[in-house]
Image 1 (cartoon, rainbow, N blue to C red):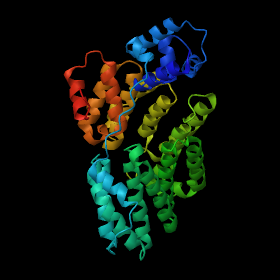
Image 2: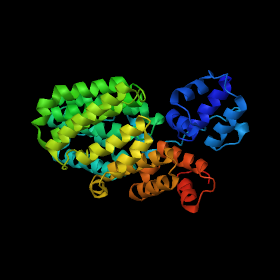
Image 3: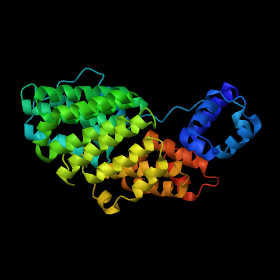
Image 4: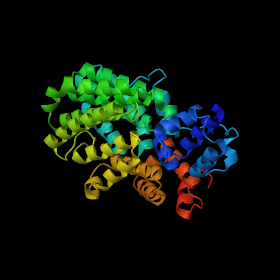
Amino acid sequence: METGIGRRIAYWRERRGLTQADFGRLMGQSRRWVQDLEGGHRQTDPRLSVLERAADVLHIPLERLVTEPAPETPGQPLPSDVATLADSLHTPARVGQVIAIEDLKRRVLFCCQAWASCHYTAAARDLPTVLTDAHRTADVSEEAAVLLSRAYQLTASLLFKYGALARTPAVLAAERALAAAESSGDPVAIGAAARRVARGLIHQGRHAAAADYAATTAATLRPELEGAGTAGLSTLGMLYLVAAVGATGGGRTSQSVAAATERLGEASEVADQQGEESGDFTSFGPTNVAIHEVDVLLRLDDAWSAVETAQRIDPTAVSELGRERQARHLVTTAHASALTRRREDALRDLLAAERLAPQEVARPSVVRLVAQLLELVPSPGPELRGLAQRCGLPA
């Protein structure tokens, strides 16, 4: 098979939201078979029968596999407030004001609450001035350095939600969060900032480095974090969870499964110590560990197990988590359902996520999932068409 056709099969497989393992299962073949097919190494296979079966699985006309696909259209631009926040990290800082610590705490808390409620643009609107004032206040107050770190942590987490267009400023914000935390000497702030740095490594495709960095930081800070109450335990547990996500970057291998399972187990131990009451807007606890297990399984190309695991989680426990955590979980389960051909379930979860947090569903990666559903469903109904239109997609 020529490399061009294999590349086009890979293109349409990815457009349909299928991993190589999922596509292989639908083709009645192994993941390695798919790798060879897409890499142009299966010249002995009957070309027409393979193409006809692939076209059927991918729900496209056969001719789509023998002509080059149109290039990807650029993603939607960043919301204006998010773009302003991203740009503010690359421009000379305005002269901030030294303000009372209690006032700074109140402003940082407002941004954190806006984030937790999935009002991302509201948080983005306030963060530039919060950062400048926190910088100025940190010059004369060590306590303000912790608040400065927290504001940068929030900035990084918010920008990571907007994909490639915001990746560079998000990584920069994570690094500044760590620098501020280290200057404060607060172990909770250092651990929380390190988690954002690890996330940045994942977003840059450096999964192994992220897993190692998060796990090493957790081991180093563990004694201090265990002595820091709920906030410390939540920070420790979240470091193990991000390490578990980082361990999935190499795809499904015995080593990646073992590493991710080990990190999830460590997070579970911390969650048992802490209970469901979490600190610092993390929603960390036994339920969040279970939710991360779903995400890890999905990343390890096991969407079927991800669906089954999600079904075992108590819905009431999920509803008690923060809105941002709930919405992200619904998006994850929607993705898993789409990969296992449960399209009605996927739509149900996306609509539930939209009701809970419209701005979460407007993120680029979620919009792509909606677009894939729109293509996969032969005759989209009014609910799916309406969701697509609200996401800015033609429907």
